[in-house]
Image (tube, rainbow, N blue to C red; front, top):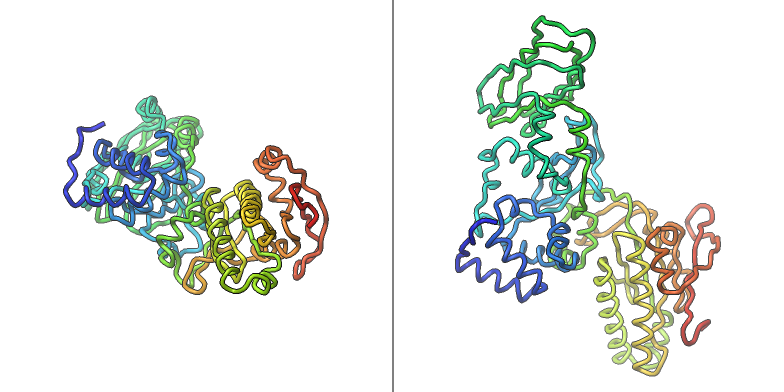
Length: 484
């Protein structure tokens, strides 16, 4: 830890507001981080790791950082990642700038279609007006600090105790090359696959070193610029190499010659959980704070797996007729408030309400299933307090791929997964929860059902507008009034 940093009066005022708007323990932990954290700890904060180390609730920590971002304490960044090496291919202040249909990683020589599951990392860096850190001027960082803090994502679990040892093992040579400069590296090539890689321009040259060793000098040239050309491979023999490097990029570059062997794979292969864009989009605090400030109207981003939960009130028309508009309105309002609370408690977010119905999203099926059971129990408690079965909730759940879009000036979702979830909800009778096979078969869902004492009843049903029959499971109500 560094010496305690003295916050300005303006920053102290921001933290005062943060303590009022976010979880107190999380707000205090964030303030401690800004005051006493190292420069590196304040750059691209991995919120899930921050919560784990501080013994904090993940959802509350995410909410606190979102409030801190809105208050200008931290800057939120959406980082496009290579799923292979974990490198940051592009850092964005907003998802609206993620426009390309494919991103290319030179280090892995692979292209990827961006999805919001594991390819977009959300991180937080302290705002320079609150505290200035070295990463605010990334070209002041040393070569390997640049790799750690700028190129690699917060999901790379760097083995700090062995980092220097691994670097000595895999790096043949490296150089810091200022803009407009040239240099020559003279090295001995081992009989292994070698990569010349620069994390600044993301340029890479593969060298397949094989065959009989030679004493003759081999020559290779590499130019760094803003054009990301495809990674090429040359075949050379073990022995001396004269590598000519030229920097035309307009900024400092940091090329290194590394052996692409087990040690490199060990360095990049150990991962830890990080906050994904998919998870953030299913966070209720994010939806409340950022609303339409997420995607452009013409933008479509894929999600390979998202869980949708639809609810509707049974007999709401009859409810208005029976108790009157005013009382029915208060009941429906209380029902919405309760559902919102249950959704947020299970790491979900309410996408929209349609009449008396709710559409919500969750990062995983088990969270949606847990929310559904919680909703059903909450409605029972509301009815018990009233002494009348007015609020009978029908629930349907489905998981699958979808597109994140902007519809009617808000973040929404589109695709067959959404359609199936809505159709499954329409199957439900009062108090029954209907879920598809991907939901029930999820390993964590089995634990949720087992702990709750419920046994799903399987059936195969044809859904309107969906080709073929769909395996659907009913999770029946076992409490008072079962069968109603």
